[in-house]
Length: 166
Image (tube, rainbow, N blue to C red; front, side, top):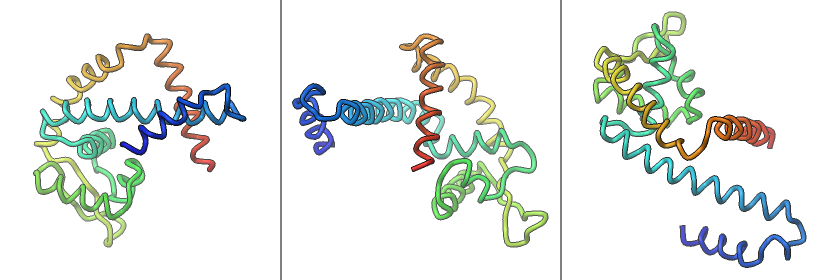
């Protein structure tokens, strides 16, 4: 954090007019602002999720499994949807299983693989959690009007596509 703050101050002190490339300055500034906004949102959401006994990764996994419905997802499908490594997904599923929120079932067509399915307890948690979480996120985004949120979504999608091409 200290390094980033020093870097931020350094760029701010230079300013966009004295840099040879204004676009490069704006790129750096954009990345800094996005990182700080995401960190603030992540802290806020993490505190909210803790009220349900969930972490960010656990909640994302539960929602993906809920949306997939029966018969759940394979570990590799869940890994792709969450954009995490196979090692990380195994640990996450282990923790969810220990909490009684998921079960691993044999994959019908691949005996080496498992399908991850929500337990009844997890379905109840997700059904109780989603409306409250949706309202919470609506409140968290209330600093932007609907048009601004739509523009931000479009810009972030464009950015993600560009990052995928790097």
